[in-house]
Image (spheres, helix red, strand yellow):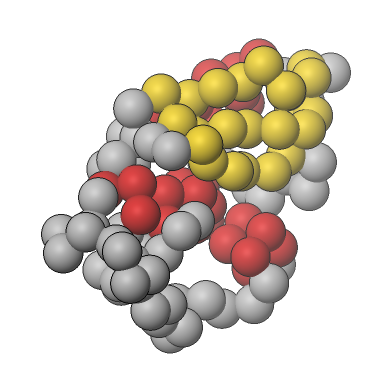
Length: 108
């Protein structure tokens, strides 16, 4: 099981969401889904997908990805500072991510 499947329940690549009636015509980068559709959790899903696509990042069952606006939020426990640094580096590179918050991550 990969990051995306574990956190968002199955393969969400084919499930488009309808934009709310008051959503802007142009989708903000943090709300862009996996296939360009409006998705409230779009940034978090794209970060999880980026983790899946990086062969150096095995799925760590004790780490979760969320988002607050355009900020990626990592939560849980990682085995090392190096692993956390790798997660932050990949998450920071995802379009729409303005920052990566690791306040809720424990190392060890």
